[in-house]
Image 1 (tube, one colour):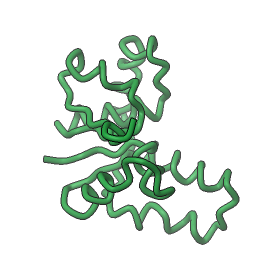
Image 2 (cartoon, helix red, strand yellow):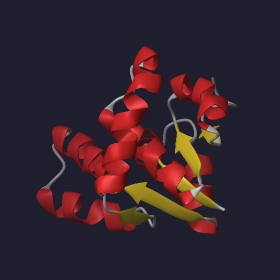
Image 3 (cartoon, rainbow, N blue to C red):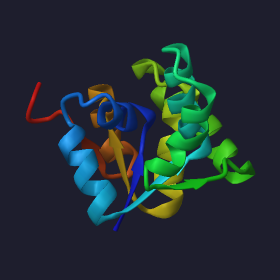
Image 4 (cartoon, rainbow, N blue to C red):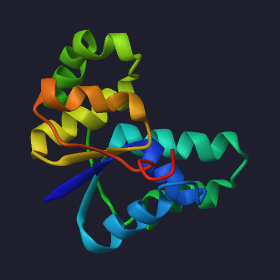
Length: 134
């Protein structure tokens, strides 16, 4: 089984927030993937916090998750997901994560509780990393 990490899950791990232990476990014990869109979100957040460029250029490699390109098929799927996720306010990054999880038949891993109602309609497993802490 593969796990697709949303930027929120990665940031929880980086900032030692609730759910970080689960992300750490996944990164060290499972096949983890991240969309290049979500990788860009992680780097963007760290850049906003003033991290030096050298750190920003290394952070994605340190995640120990395979960073997969956001290709035309995922772009189409993410666009198609807009209609079914609009009411939850999901961003392009959120939909990129879901599109990759759908393509790879993987579990989408997030720190965003709003995703949970999407599991059944999308036929997708979604793991909320903060379930025990919130």
